[in-house]
Image 1: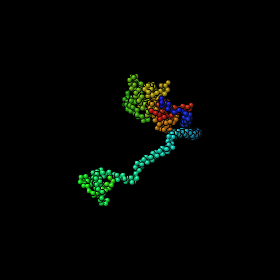
Image 2: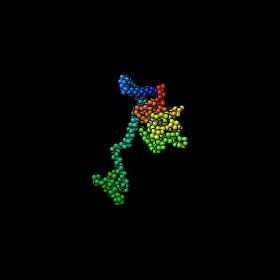
Image 3: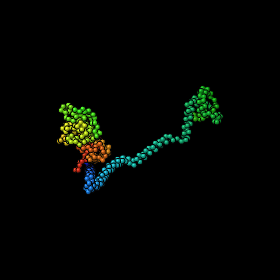
Image 4: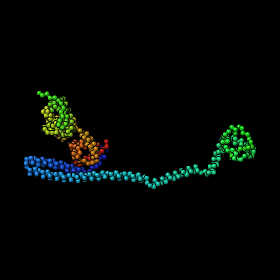
Amino acid sequence: MGAKQSLPKVTAQDKAILDLKLQRDKLRQYQKAIQVVLDREHAIAKAHLATGQKDRAVIALRRKKYQESLLVKTDKQMETLEQLVSTIEFSLVEVSVLHGLKQGNEVLKEIHKEMNLESVEKLLEETHEAREYQREIGDMLANNLTLDEEDAVQDELRQLEAEAVCPLFVFKLRDVLNGCSLAGPGRDRGTTSPITACTDDTTYARDKFVPTPYIPSEFTYILSSI
Amino acid sequence: MALTTLTTHKTPSGFLLPSIHSAPPFFTQQPNPVSQSAVTDHWINLILAYARYRRLFILRVEDAETAGSEWDEILRNERIRHRMPPSHLSTILAAMVQRNVAAYESPKQTRSALVYWRLPEEWADVLHRWAADTGQLNTILTFYDITDPPLESPLSGIPVLLLKKAISILSKSGKAQTISIADGEGVRFFAGGR
């Protein structure tokens, strides 16, 4: 049922093409008929020659010649007709190609409507802004400290580390400092850092430390920050 | 009485006749219905095979009446001087029509029939395949285009009557459409949904 409905309608064009093709068929059949006549005249001419009737043979050959000229004429007509048919059929193909192009164009237009230049520009701009904003936040979070502040941070870090390693030592040092004034050799004495000095022998620091007014230069740094 | 040996025989056209073709009783109508039905079976097979071999489409009772028809090679056996009597051929034609391997050319007579060595459904299939293979779908074709194509095709020489049957089968499934104008008829084939 459905298949029948999908059949294309027979248009006037279709009928015209069919008409042309039927005419062409008629020409073909006519050519066939002429060919039969040609062969027959040829046979007649042969038969007349065999019986010695030369003039009759000539007449038959003349008729044959005439039929041949007809054949040539129909050939030409057929060519014209077939050209016409091909041209029409090719034009129909062109029409359908054009129709296809049109539909493709429509679809493209429809898509472009949803995606006009302004909205794309706006979208890109928004994306750019968002990225810019994100970068600013990042900058703010990471780079808002000056060099001096950074130095202070590092100092605090070192102190915390020292405290973590030898809290007792620092505590005792404080006691010492309470009882005596700072007096000792210059800061240039010794090369080890206060932290390593501490970690080198922590047991010593905790158990065997004897308070003494002498404070090695290594510790002055720590003391100053207490 | 001469003793005839039953052998196969190759005809001038290259068709191999079965050995039964050289048995005289094969040609005469049998009074016994059982043997007649065996003879009929053999004849139908022979006719269909020969028709397919020579691409013959129409079998007439007349072919048995006069010599010189294209069916002579099977309707006559000069080696045993036997031929098919027209009445016997008429019986066999009736049997073929009854079994749907032939159809009377026009329903009002029983003297000539289309021989279905391909059923109309099979012809429809061949026809559609030919149109598709030669790129002639969606093109308007005249019947002459199909029956006498410039290049030999499986459909060359098909009778218009059989062609119309095949087209009407295709039309039912939406694969063909006939177009008629005052001057004649044409057909258009479609890829068709299955």
